[in-house]
Image: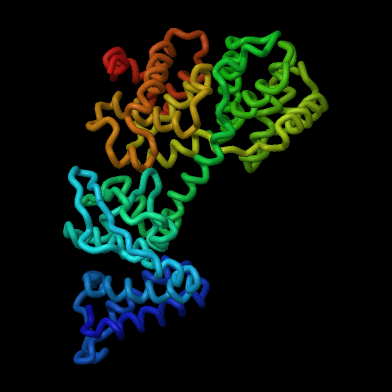
Length: 447
């Protein structure tokens, strides 16, 4: 760290940060460049010409605690300028005392209350200095909400004088911490995206008995249709989300309209066509869907059915599916290739089981991750970090995971083999055929 005063470093950071924003950079990138430029600046006693590195490729920037404090001061002043009215209100309120629970066990209070006009980044810094550890190793959680550094304390904890938070700390940075503290600017949006998806997914949940309202078709016919659509999905190499969105559209339509047996396949290919239009770059043509039904339905009939489906659903097509949640959970869980394939296999098997439609997509994705962890004998099967990240505890997921395990056990003897065959291919490392030999399903199902 150059030998410059805190006031001068803070002023320099503010100047460089605002210049970066003026050039069109995002705040994270602008702040990172400003920190590096301050760290590389020559000290007053050291002329620029004398700073010649022996090996430029090995030049390491060490951001000391003094530099972090300088940046923190500068950022606080910036936020005070942006939120002047809000900060004036929060400044009049009493400070909040924080009780911090650590992921590894134990808890303690921070030494002094923190003003409601301060940023979460300062709260993270205070937690880090009490351990001590680096701030990048700390992720703060309140309930299931991950706290961002640019949030104001008053926006989150207004109306209370004592707040409880959880600190996820790792010396080396575990999978969850690596993702949430990544230098990739997009990762800072992950908690917000998850929260938005969880609010939207509530509309996807339906009763497991919704098929009882149908007079001409039953659960078994639905399963046969779904199994056939998995084969079609594989044939045309469509995206995973297309498959999940197709099944979601079918179930939502069947919940609202009576469908005769002879029209069930028409509804299936129509929902596939709608999902493909939203998700695929080059979706199959209407004549392809007609060919898939052996000419039972013409392209015109499919178009007419498409209008009926969209009108019935109120043109609300897009919705969070378990496929999106699984991608984030796999990354947070630190899955290798086989682990990813196994979790996806479990999740796609759930599409055929009518018992599982009553669970939210995020619940299904988390249960698939839990069961895959148990099958692979990961310890612990459901880490505390994953509980915070997904919002589901082990006891919440256990009933759903047991149904998934039972579905997996019966997959080998079932007449509906599309999902199993798909995951028995080399593309998925034959995980569908290997799972029975490698893992003790009976033992897993009993725990």
